[in-house]
Every structure is written in C-alpha cells, then in structure tokens.
Image (cartoon, rainbow, N blue to C red; front, side, top):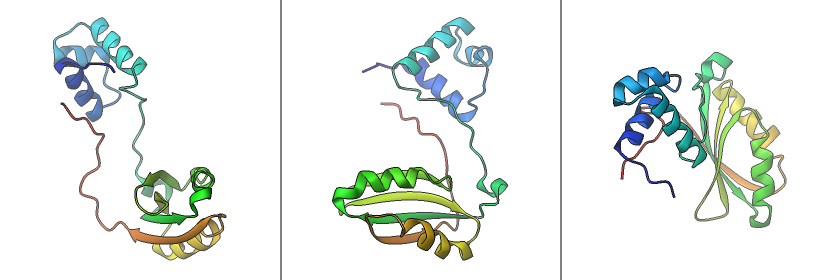
Amino acid sequence: MYKMDDTDYAILELLKEDGRMSYSDIAAEVHLSRVAVRERIATMKNNGVIRGFTTIIDAKAYNKMAAVFLEVEVEPTKLEKVAKKLMENQDIAIVSQHTGAAGLHVHAYIESVDKLSDFLDEYIYSIDGVKSVTSNLLIRQYKTTAWVAKY
C-alpha cells in the first residue's frame, strides 16, 4: 500500500477543491517544483490513490429536478445481474451493495417527483430479481465533496 505524506495530502486537498488546478499552481501552494508535483500526482494515480478526475454537474442542467435514493431488495442469487442492469441506466449515478438483507443502494436523478412512479414501474421493477424498493426523495443537500482523510 502506498504511504502518503503530508505533502501528498495537501496536493489531494487542492485537487479536491479544483481538479483542474495546474501543476504550477499546486507547486506554489505546497512549495515544490512543478515537476515534483507532476511526479507525485502520477505516483498517486499509479498506486490507485487517485482513480481519476471528473466534473461535478448540476443534475438540473439536464432537466433532472429530483434526486432519489432507492433501497432495492434483490433475490440473493440475482444480485450481480441486477446491479449490472441498474448500472446501464444513465439516470442512475451510484449503485452500491450494502450489508443486511440482499440489497442495493441506488442514487438516481429523474425529471420530477411525478416521474418517480414511472421510473420505478417501467425500469426498476421490470428487472428480474428485484423484490421490493424503498424510495426516498432528496429535499435538501447540505454537503457534497470529494473525500480526503488524513490518517
């Protein structure tokens, strides 16, 4: 496992705030050369610390006005198949397995609350192996951030 130091954590914090920050700007913040920063980032990528860079998009820009969290109870023998099918849907952002009863936790973005029933009936419940679904609509989000913890 890759052993990170305080400088690596500082670089990650800067990238968390602005994933497009230049090596030169990062270097100025952490008091290293641009080349040293580039090498550290490459090392963290090669060791799986950094899995990639992404853009955070406001779902409303895509006319997705409602965020919904689903707890999907699945027949245990069909869990992988159901997860793969859910991952194919472009309105679904996260599919995770959780402890307890055979289940999946799903984050999806839909056009409106009125469309939730259609989304469940026409897509989720049509997947072979889905036993039941509990849905929770997001009404307010207090924090969304990339996670960086220093141990």
